[in-house]
Length: 69
Image (cartoon, rainbow, N blue to C red; front, side, top):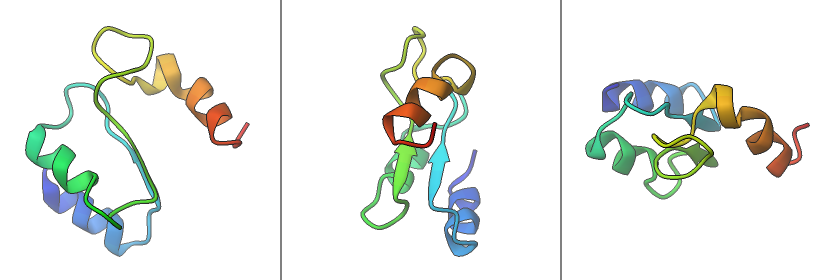
């Protein structure tokens, strides 16, 4: 993923993003976590898998955590 994708998402008003393990580098992660970039960012260390937050493994738990399920 490139930072241009994040800029496009922000300009379209997308409030939250989920970056799958292996889909981003440090530059993309920094851009995603900039202040006021997005209301929520799921990425990096965490989740139940050994590679980080995975939507298939951790998606339901994450949605419950923010009251969306």
